[in-house]
Image (cartoon, rainbow over all chains, first blue to last red; front, side, top):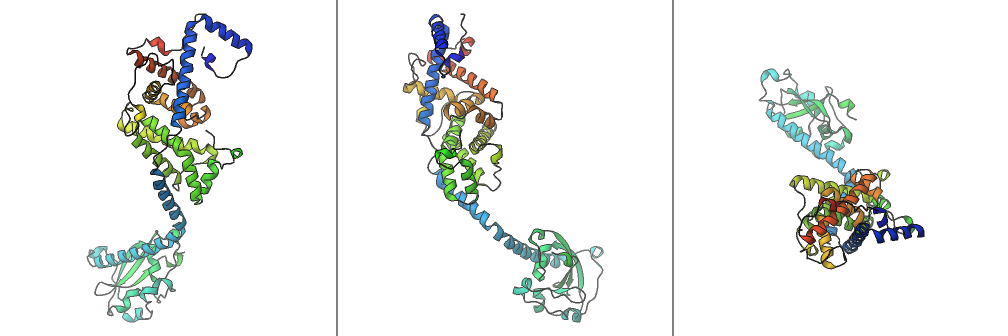
Amino acid sequence: MPELAAASPAPDAAADLQRRHLDGCPACAEWLKRHGALAGGLGTVAAEWRWVNAPPRLEPRLLAAYRAQSGLREMHSGWLPALVWASAVAATVLLALLLVHAERVPERARPPRIHASRTQLAGVQPAPAETAAETDVAAGENGFIPLPNAANLPPSEELDVVRIEVPRSAMMAVGYPVSPDRASEMVQAEVAVGFDGLARAVRFSEAESSN
Amino acid sequence: MSSLAPQTGLPTDESLFERLRAGDEAAFLALYRRRQGGIYRFALHMSGSAVLAEDITQEVFLALIRADSGYDPRRGALSGYLFGIARKLVLRHIERTRADVALAPDSDDSALSEISVTDDPMVDLTRRESIDALRHAIVALPRRYREVVVLCDLDEVDYAAAARILECPVGTVRSRLHRARALLLHKLLHNERGSRLAVGALKPARCAI
């Protein structure tokens, strides 16, 4: 009987057969009537609800989100260098913090103490702080590069070398070109620290492979 | 559930999606205006809450505009993808609350108000009271039956698309729809007569001829 409720027109013979069956079968006639009424009611509900929409306030909210998302996509390529620069600054700060605490490291954990004369470092012209990252690397014979702020520090007769690990982006601070996709990798660095605990120069063990 | 084929003169959902991915704001608006109603109504019927339906609609379109939306045109129509997200969000809500929807919806959904007593709700389902009763009955259906009725009977989604949205075979959609309609009839008659019908009333009538 469910087939009788189908909307598709049956051939004349079949329709006649159905009609005669329904005339003599109250159960099927009732079933068909109810399902027909239900289909009509569902159609009415669907027609009424076709005009029910999401609240209008949703559209501007989503549009703002879309604009923000589109902006992010457009700026993505521009963000990467900025991100690298921010990483470089953060790494420099981290470097400074590590150096401040370097004196507190137990003696056995520290690398062998070495001596370096001031003249060794003086052979390298320190780069101005504001342009350090844009200039070529100016390393001395021993591979140490004066830090941008070392020029303002008093000379140190005796230097300690402290070995640390920093993000590759820190190399940008002293002029090494760094590929953005490798900026977050960690590299070994040696920092020459003066008697006052302040860093004077740095040497990267993987400087040649920074790109 | 068409994507509005080219013969309508309107761009398809998929082409609008491509354009919105390229930053075309007009394409995003066109797609939103075309599809928000269906998504909102589906969420409203499924959750019984206008507030939740609004949240779900918002989440669906936010998911679409995210860089990692995950929509792949080769895997089906965009509208099915949107309904699929809405359905998952509804199910998540149902699981979280560990309760099915209440009959009484919140906010301004006054259309689902009181069920009036009529002489025979099945005789004239075009009367206001009977339509309201039917809507109540739809919202009160178990979730698996409610979603097929909402998709196929109210949102006019075809069986194949409904099967993709519900992640089940087309045959399951048909059988659930058949069962859902029987349940609706039962609920309407149950409400009308104020007494429990015999279990046999749930089944299609079988003639002896």
